[in-house]
Length: 320
Ligand SMILES: [Zn+2]
Image (cartoon, rainbow, N blue to C red; front, side):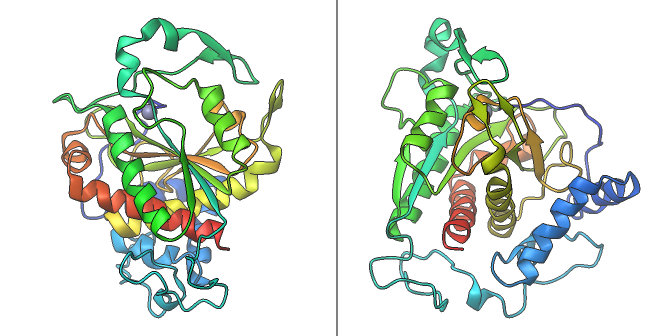
């Protein structure tokens, strides 16, 4: 969890969760959000990110129910353990794996031990714009499945997928430390790894009825130790690719309570983003406090799909 947003949009029907938020977005003339969505789709229509087909797999932005993208799959680098050379893209390096030489940092949000170390995680750290808690406990489902356990599981699944393609994958924590790290250290780990991409994995703790995922992009911050200006554009690219592939793999719709149906939200208050010098996004995979989302988040099969979607987004970005 990194955000509990205002309920500015009521719960949406399951079958067409995107339709109304997008209409709202268009009607309210939210150019940034809409532009993000259109770019997301345009990226897919270009055949690289597969966003159009991916979006259509879960929902439609136009009201029509588009089927999976026609003919773009042969250009999409679909991760596959059994067929690592499945992509026909001419940019694919030789047998060592398409991600050979690429460094990916995955940041599993929170830490299962944070609950026992509240003093440590409550101390303030400098995030450029201000000082903020070192880390937080994260949320949980109503039945007690913690966000920290969720993020580690999804991250480990994604690591396996990415390593099978030759990537060097580093974690900010792997359940191997009593608490944290603090958000500033989480950012520093990605920076010092010179990561080609960093994804911070989370699940939200919003109100019941609020559903779906959203990807958080760094806003332009230039204050104190923070200067995100060089990473704003590439992070958006990364985030759009992750969002598109997440939709495609999970069938989940973009959030119905934040992001105006785009699944994309820009923020300037997260130390993990403010202090990053490499392309980085957060993904809130769903809302742990909604029973329907919780049923997904607690499913190992669904978490595998989530990990696959996140991984494919990363692969698409680092290979571009
Ligand atoms: Zn979180």
